[in-house]
Length: 580
Image (cartoon, rainbow, N blue to C red; front, side, top):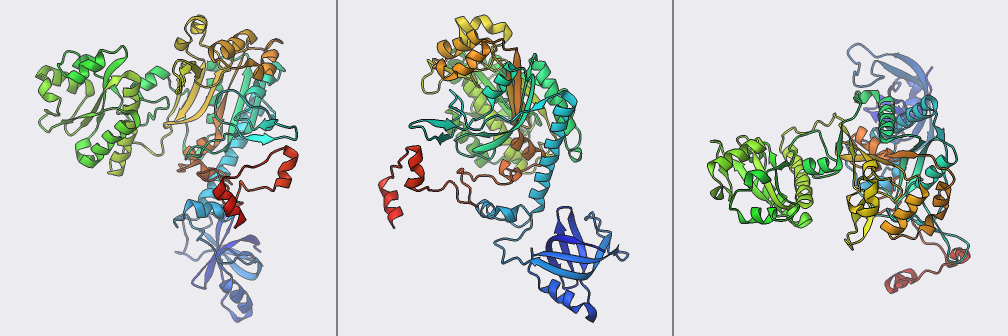
């Protein structure tokens, strides 16, 4: 006998395919008169209805096996059937290859969840998290601790959601991470903490961001940077899905300065080459005005990337769009150089360069016939950032034109270390802000600089990068109350009273500690090659941070707001709209 609760597709009136959480099963519809009521019921059942079928499981006839289905060697000969719940007309077909707008998918998310793609992603996510729990709690003695969701505002970092309280003028804040609580747990002697943590940021969604998201949050006492890195490498190796191959450890590592110089970003995609090359020394002796002008500045440099077979795969329009992108995003001019079939160079620069300089340029950039070089001159960080962005854009264009550059099945992990501890504020470069957060400890070699020249201090922060995406970040923390107070008050010019509870805790014998948080949504989306983290979250928010299914956020009445001492001041046009 066979019992199945699922949804159905019907084909040719002879058989239907039932779907449940384990996959698909073919059911043969009886054609004899004795089972005419079963045939009529199943033949007329709307697609995606919930049905119960009993019958006999038997091998498929020879030659009719389907190797693409796990159940392709058997079929069920239906004997009885019952419609448990009929499905009304669908807003879209439940098939992965049917294109649907994301807005429609999110409005009917409960239907979209029936798709094989989402089912597979969410079940894989569950398996990965279970393996992570096993590794941390069972094998390494971590304690799973839940931390509060309602807390208070944290200085710096992303904007936080505010939650009103019944005390006049006082608000809770939804934490952007459990950062303070996990440090307080270390003070409390809970030396190995772990949590699958819900976090919140009041900022617009992007393909890799959501206003609410999930972290694998970890903190340890008496640990150094290398200890955290080895733990995470073991965690990922243990929880990595078998069907995605294996990952090799230890992961390679590079400094922030190396990443910026070679890739133009602090999250390099190392699956392909096209590294940024410093050609300052090659062109230093030239009479090119913009080159000499750039090199006259303290941090001036001339750098370039070489696009393999750019002549074949990139059009003039493509090259124009690359130049325009560098100009609009980075205010950076770009010069192109083309390597002709005879090995000579075609560029506005060549008339200023002798044969020796041209040969040195070809050698430095490892240029070959048909390659295109994009050259930039100016301040080091701006030049590298612009070329780093062009490197990724060029890769997209090359792949769109048919050149295989990045292996979609490859997973290249990378540690990026030695970040600056502080950065100049964008709105006021004379003031400093934390490059990550104010609890990050300075690099042991740079502690003295913290008190004399904080702009030169490196941090003990580390990021984990996968295929050009940041999937984790952490640091060794400041465990000295005196040093924490100095960073807040003297360097960042923040009011330390906001964090008085943490500073006071550090005065009660806080152990050295550090930790990391892995972005679970982003990690899973990369493992399953999803275009957005929304494709690995059961009920995500839209690009604008809205829940299109439940229509949240929504209005509340003045009576509901009254206990919180809040009144809404409506713009005039919204007042009129509400009246109508």
